Structures are given as structure tokens and as C-alpha cells.
Length: 251
Image 1 (cartoon, rainbow, N blue to C red):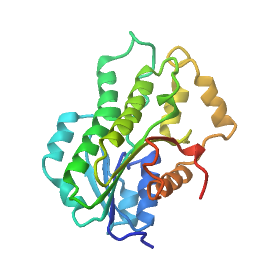
Image 2 (cartoon, rainbow, N blue to C red):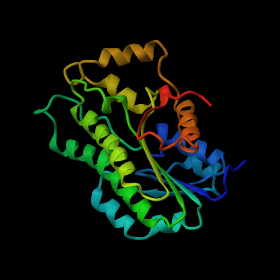
Image 3 (cartoon, rainbow, N blue to C red):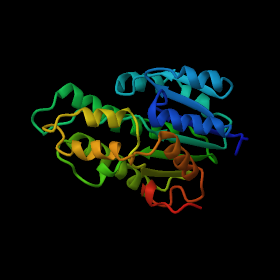
């Protein structure tokens, strides 16, 4: 059943992990989704052919993203909607390691994907949305944005940038815009596998994440996605610029 037929959503990184779960949850509620990722999601396409649009796009390639934005495809997708959602989910935890040993190309890619792409998409969405249309922008952040960890200088700083973008954007008081940077908790995705595969030298707290996996402390992408979308669609969304999903009291 559709919550609101004229709600449309853009989801980045919908090909797997949390992004796939977020897109599936939205589609299950009858909300049209535009998925942006390097690879298409054949499973979602088969189950939701009428509601899902997909654009293969490497969001870490800033020139490619800017070229796509200039085509007007985003404006065409949101046309006719009364409420538009943007879930900036795509991101990478790599490169891990101490400052001074990181590969420059990997570092640049992480900043482009984790920071530049979300800011470009948020800016483009607001510009493309007609007056009177609600805009809900959700940055998928991390507890690492608020707590520094050895070996995670790039990840912590890029996620902190999303938190500050949400704070500053709220002060802009753009009509119709609600924005929040939300830490979703620790989720059983491929990113966690990358963390567990890191060396102790690159990420000294690796064993902590190994233990969380062993002890069943990781949440499923589906459970987290459902809570994220409930919050994104709620009247409370955008009341706070920086949010920890685990701290929200269920309605």
C-alpha cells in the first residue's frame, strides 16, 4: 500500500547492502525509486519494475556525476511529486591506515564518494524541486563522525563532513527542506567484512568488530532500513540535524 502516491525517492548505492534494503523498503511502500549506483540491481528490478528506475553511475567520478546532473534527469524524475526523498547512502570505509601511508587515489575516491557526491546531489535536488514540494534529505552518517578512531582518519572526517553539512543546511532555512545526518548503527554488510579484513596495523580496533560479529551484535540491513525510512517519513525528521538512529524512541 502506498503511503503517498506522489512521494518519490532517490537512493544512492542501491545495488547492495543497506542501500538495497532502503530501496526495497521504499518500493514495498509503493514509493517510486531512482537508484544511483555503479551496478544495477536485477532483483529489485524484477520485483518492482513499475516503480524502480536505475541509472548506472560511478558516484566517485565527480565529472561523470556532474555531467549526469546536467542532463536534467533528476528534475524529470521528481516532476509531479509532492514530496521528494534523497537517501545519500553510498560510501566506503577504505582507505584505512595512518596518515602518511594512504594511497592518494584511494583517498581522493573516498572523499568524492563520501562527501562530494552527497553534497552535489542535495544541491541539485533542491534546485530541481519546484516551490511547494517537500524535500527530505537523509545523509547516512556514522558514529565515527562523532568519535575518532585510529586508522579511520578518512572515514571519520568524511562522515563528519555530512554531519556539518546537515547542520549548516538547516540554518539556511530553505523552504520545504528537511535534512538530517543519521548514524544507523553497526550493520551486517559488506563494509563490515572490509573492516574485519583489515590488518591490525591499519585498524587497531579490528578485533572489536570481529567480536561484534561473533556475538551477533550486528543488525540486519532490512531492520535498519525499515527504521530509517520510518524516521525519514515521520513528522520528526529534520527536527535535529545530527541523529543516532539507535537513540530514537519508537513511536
